[in-house]
Image 1: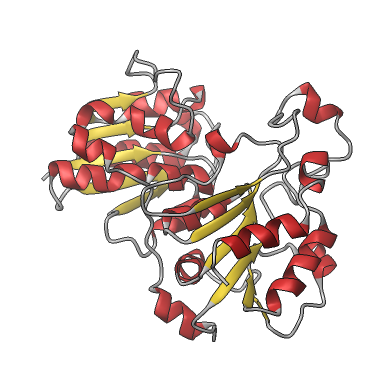
Image 2 (image 1 turned 135 degrees about the vertical axis):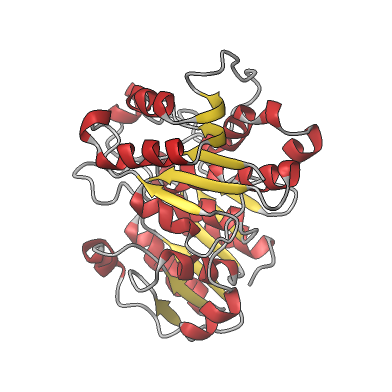
Length: 334
């Protein structure tokens, strides 16, 4: 029986990408393969109901030096008592170097251990993540590895939150919402309001979002009668179940869109400055991903001088409610 430690301490979407390795390892080395993760405390709750993952090591402060970090020390001590057969490091930051060097494992792959770099044609973050473990699994297991997550059973979540058998989720916020600057990934509030009202005439609409975002969501209220407000009311496991049971999810470039694509829930992603082919919801043979974009000639421009000089956020503003409704209508999900 093999034991594997995987390190991925990014945002929720980054951890969803990394789940592509789990089933590949299980198929390659056996279902009894023991898989542990090092991740942030918040994103680590992604695995609360996942029987494929044995243990989570939370790492809250990634930049604290090894000798000052009790969490890093506990990971190392655990590996000394029960050495791992394999360490897979999906992190490239130098703040992880001392940690991955100190962890006891028979084999280590990833940044700081491999000199190979992915071919230029590999662009999407999921494909870049997968490339790291390409040489330790068979070609078949590699090609059939996709992000997959496990949460509360959909029927349980639907009953718990008193949802109808058919509903569409709208996830209007994103991780940049709380920052005191222009949120380049955001869609217009007036557009969200219009979309919510139009969709609620045809199906039940469920609004999701994080806690402590009242300032943003209050701008979208009052909601129509056929809307269920679950903002800040679910655990991550329950949220996964709610998304899993949905007909579709509509969002910007954010973690919930990646969750939906990993659950094979049809996802409509409103994309502007970010490169959809790199960080957008991942397309697999088993899901449907619709990228809705204004396709301006200056897009994508994320983290470039072009984006910083744009004060109107035109690539998101130019996505009309009609464009979104037409795309949803043509997909026959209503």
